[in-house]
Image (cartoon, rainbow, N blue to C red):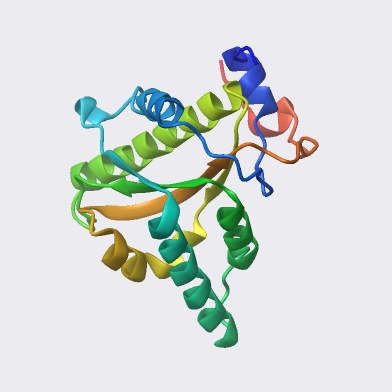
Length: 193
């Protein structure tokens, strides 16, 4: 399959919840992660760290998240679509955990809070690069925030320095959902002269 151009990949990207079991080659994952690392960041700080999970480590993280989400649900804590996302994570051949590794949470003055916000935006840009790059290569992805429900437990398994920000399930899609409704340009753009 020929790579999609950037505009087509942006327009084609969907949240994929069903994956084929076939693995993704390490060279392809490395290429996608290099493209993620091309994202802009404050003073070129590159505040992201990606942890690729496959095999038994992936299974351990997913089971840990499932156990924690089930417990929280029984306690009537809102868990969003976590259990549905766990099913998708089980199907995907790889999970990518996204960490912020060089920033401290701050309630300090405006410059400190600006730096922290910049790091978070940079990580979002790196994730978006990865999502678009994966789409351009014919892969599907699902951006998962609910891993934060089991952040402490996952960090015990992973033993990586940094602050867990989110996860991405990645694989060969079984489905290609219709595009989600989008607001018109007039609804989200304001022009001032």
